[in-house]
Image (tube, rainbow, N blue to C red):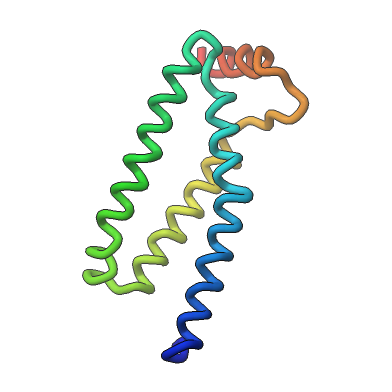
Length: 117
């Protein structure tokens, strides 16, 4: 259990800043880069628009249900649920997202077309 008072406030602040550093410095840029690479050139604008709406709606839903989850199943179980979702996401990326380093967008498009045709 975290200490009460100033110690707890500084611990929460430190964990929040650490989370934001990892989120904004690593995960978010990779997400947007990956999204820009998976859509074919002719529909990239539309695909990115749909992806942005889905990401914002997902963030909205998580923010909306988070307090209900905490009050319903507790803070530890709520974060355990997020850990499970994170592990599922990591596994999905390792299994299905192709490596894009050193390849052009046109090459990626041709490979994805061949894979899913």
